[in-house]
Image (cartoon, rainbow, N blue to C red; front, side):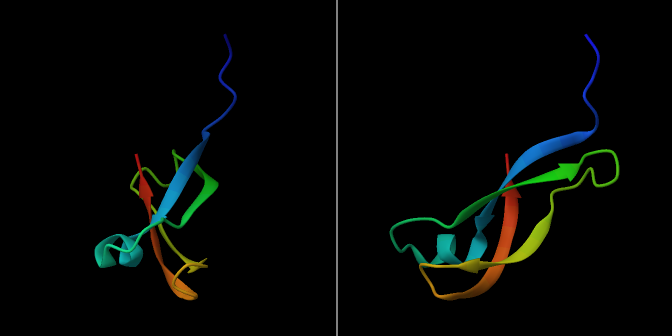
Length: 60
C-alpha cells in the first residue's frame, strides 16, 4: 500500500487552562509535516473558555 505523504493530524491542547484546574478543555485539530517538524509543535491559539490567546501544545 502506498503512503499518502508525511502530513499527519495532531491535536493541540491549551497548557494554561490545564494548569488552572478549571472544568473543560480547549483543543484544536491541525496537520503537520512530520518530516519537517518531528518535534511537538506549540502554537498560540484562542481559548474561548479563558477568553484570551494562550499557548497550545501538541498532545499524543
